[in-house]
Image (cartoon, rainbow, N blue to C red; front, side, top):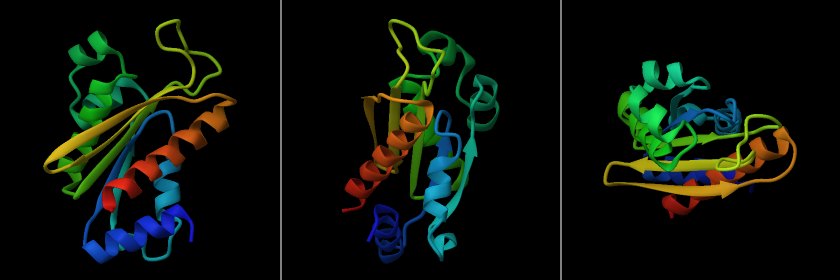
Length: 155
């Protein structure tokens, strides 16, 4: 059984729902979660918020925070996960924000830097990663890590 099936079984068994807010992963997380037949039992929906304006308009992430911390930061990942959970009224919200490359990286925020946050009612957890490889490698690694984080919190 792959991780998506495991997550689906756990969400259904616990009568829990999930929603996603994705940036650098470009919708790949939602794609993986909805590839499971019956995913409408647990998957509420998601948003693809690539630009900062989308993060502000759709998730109400403060433009001031985005400017101060940058879209690729722990705080913004946490705000995204909380906002999507609250907006779509799901039990879990998960977000991914990062730099998939090959351009866009800086010394402080290199290509591959990614933050993934999982929010539930009582708390938010966020992990920082630095993935290597091509754009597709980084997107895939980010989604795989997000799925592992989610599976962990469903145990």
